[in-house]
Image 1 (cartoon, helix red, strand yellow):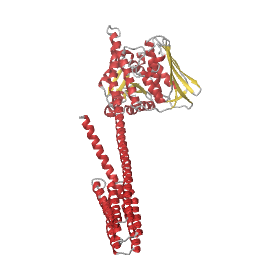
Image 2 (tube, rainbow, N blue to C red):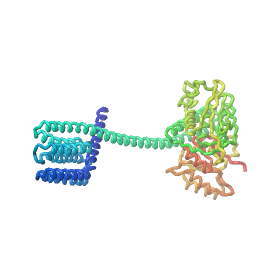
Image 3 (tube, rainbow, N blue to C red):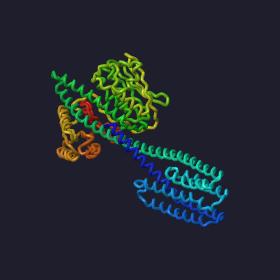
Image 4 (cartoon, one colour):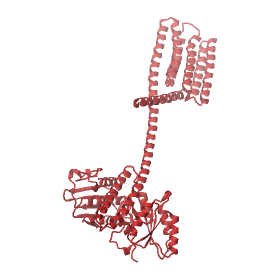
Length: 596
């Protein structure tokens, strides 16, 4: 069945190609119709005048009258072709046949010319006839080679008429001349055939290239549509997968807190460990998919390194402490040419990988100037990488010292994301490692001297938390019931009153009621994507304008979207952002009320 379908497609394509070739032939035949008619009429008139001057005879005038009548029909047929809207499509074969018949009639008339001259043993007349007719044949044939039927109809009758007249004279010389005419006809047709085949090859090649270009354009459009659909799918999957994971993380944190002194507390801790592993794997998979789909674009500008490095310290301090590792960070006032968000993601994956493969000692993040470059190093005292494996660590799903594919250690995508991001940002990267001694990943950045806006999203502080530092009342705008229930449960366990609403209208009503009750909110949390496509950032900005000047509340966003464009919008807003799934400790630290 598959072969039959392919054969049908091939036959249909060949039929379309042949139709295009036929249209091109007919178009070429009629393109010079008027000019060739005028040239032929002038040549026939000049021939008639010359012959009548040399051999006055009524037959010559009769011949010219016949020729003139046929010539009169040719431009009329040309105008008829121009008025036919289907001349190059449905009627193409008919017009090609009509052209051949007209060439036949025209050639027969020229074949009669030798017979119109008075008979007699006149060598001059024979030579003149040969010159005129063979010249016309040899000059006219190349212009008709697009159609061999027209060439044959044009060349053969006039040549045979001339040869027959010469042979009829019966002399040796005239017979030799007749044979020469036939030989000239054969050579003319031979070369006309070659030119015809060459022209058809050119036409076929032209239409094949056009067809190929058309198919290529269709494939490009299909790829673009596929990439667009893939990007749209990744964005939806990113949000939809992070949303339940965000709720699970918050509910798990509540259970972990409530079961802290209970024998089942160990299960709660295992649950949270699995949630963190799943979150890390989801981040890595989505990063790889977005990078491969071309959904991530770098916007490089001068950025300060200090905010990027400080945010890394805040993000990974708790994880390093859990493993008993030292996380040392040497902040730097250097500026580099890069994309703040993508650079932070790149270095975050390096630090995450370093902590994962380090059991004792620690991890160092340091930036140093080296000539026109800035070397950003992530150094660990972990298991190290053998020389033969130092390039394979950037392959998907490859993990050093994890042959059993222990999922608690992730999917092995972190360094694959690092490699893609480094290529996208055009930041060369070097790896130096010794098994059992540790590794150093170095990113070489171009130094920048022009200050720019601070880079990187604001990160939650990881300092020890006390209930006295938490706000008394929090307003949450989120249309997901599970998220509202989870955040309510978490904050209530810390004696924080939470008012949960679904949209901006309900939030404004809650703020008005709080003002009337003289129980203002100290923190407003808004989800980035609300129901019906409402932009949470716009809602958060609108609500922030309602805060009283004497008691402004802090406004923050929670989002499951990680596209660079979204991150830049959040950064430009100046609002604090938390990224789903939100760690309970990070959420509590983010809403902590600063000392007054």
